[in-house]
Amino acid sequence: MSGNTLVTVTFIILCHDSAERVTSLVRLLLQEDPECRVIVHLDKKSPKTTFKKLILALDDEPRCYLMRNRVRCGWGQWGLVEAPLLALRHALSQEVVSDYFYLMSEYCRPVRPLSELREFLTAHQGANFIECETSDWIKGGIREDRYLYRHYLDKRKHPKLHRWMYRAQKKLGLKRQEPISFEVRFGSQWWCVKKESIQNAFYEIESNSEYNRLRTAWIPDECYFQSLLKKVSSDDEIYPILTFCPFDNKGKPELLVEESSVPLRFFFARKYP
Image (tube, rainbow, N blue to C red; front, side, top):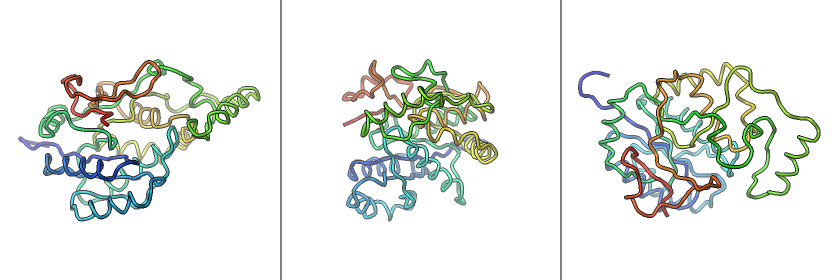
């Protein structure tokens, strides 16, 4: 990229709740950034009426794509990784491909003008804004056992059975070995990553089946992309995330009410009501 040309961004929005909230966010993004693109994935578990509302509201937006090949996105389940992967594959298959991809939820809102985001990304071309931390990043609960054992169930829906399956595997000695070809890293689900790294990540996935073991990790959205990007990026390409998403001491996201509580270095924040 040369001259004063600013980088372009595709925003990928994961949603499950309110068609009105999603529509408002999409229109805000499209209005503030006349060159951005938006991809919306609605949880397949969401009511059909929500999807119909999104079709009516967004299908005529030329820079917005509402995904039809949707997946179920249970908390802590593989769908929260599969949905962004599907969105990224779609984006990379288009004639025009953005320079950066920004993953967010319907509860995210910009806290600074999007023009400033593009200027910032242009000034930091080559950087990936993603957390790729050791297991010390995890505030509560199990750490390495998240991926050394298999977790098939949604803990929020089946807490007792989830706990029983985990304990049964430990008792039976079914602990898996550490991955050989990559180091498991952890971090926030909400990242902003350059096109070249996403392309390299897909090449890494297709050439290395060992990443499939993370399909049965617990909360894979906090380790899959983080491990991939750590593998395909150099240390000086990894920068802190741009979305403010505070957690309490139990690892649960805190509800934000006032923008004034968001540090200036962030461009988006969640979780707004």
